[in-house]
Image (cartoon, rainbow, N blue to C red; front, side, top):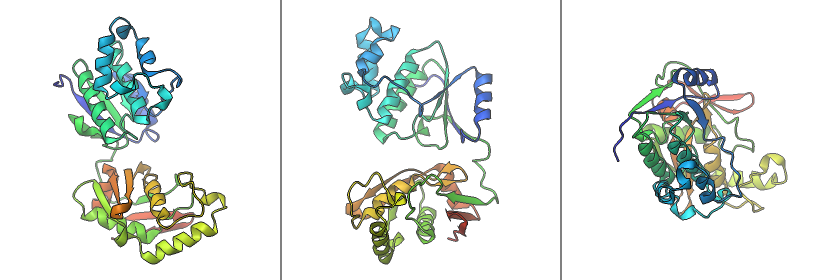
Length: 304
């Protein structure tokens, strides 16, 4: 299917630029739909939820066709609470597509989606673009391959002489990535040509540090700061430091924007596959000064 209308991607920090988004909503007449704030009656099935929409009440075949386009054809009898975050977003997107009475600014659609879910969302957006222009809002360009135009707001397209700070404020547990590890990660990014990177753990994490981290984790396992909810076993095992790193990389921010869209530890290859945000990637490539706010009152410049 061919797009008949334009798809525009806006890269913006929605928290810091909330007034800008409200102004944009007012001048375009579009309602902001934040896909990170979805509420459903989780006990209902996907089919029941869609069947109440007027367009589907007398046309079951259209509903099934839309489910197939969204990659949800096998989930019709699933309860909504059983869906992944990405599948719930796809379900909401279907309802917006069939509601032709309104236009929306689609915020955070692709965040926390798997690659296959992004592909399905793209197919739905192409369907939507047959009859209206589409504006996507996100802090990064993840999923923006569909866009005819990408706009950075306000200055994300310019890497100037400002100081850039990598912050771990969102990491609630003890951070296991000291400055020397972040320096090595930035070196990997600098040497890479795309935002998709492979972090070789044997180069980035010294063997003696893995042993040290292992001892520290187990010596403090009963303390609140060492409660890593995604690791259920105790004592900690060798290699757990890399599972922790996988999660904590995704929580790092640079000047308020996410550093990494996703990160996946591959034990058999001893690497972490990660996708940098477009902004962080360009900062690593072009910024003259990047600092790492590793702890309170402890800031160090990353010289690579």
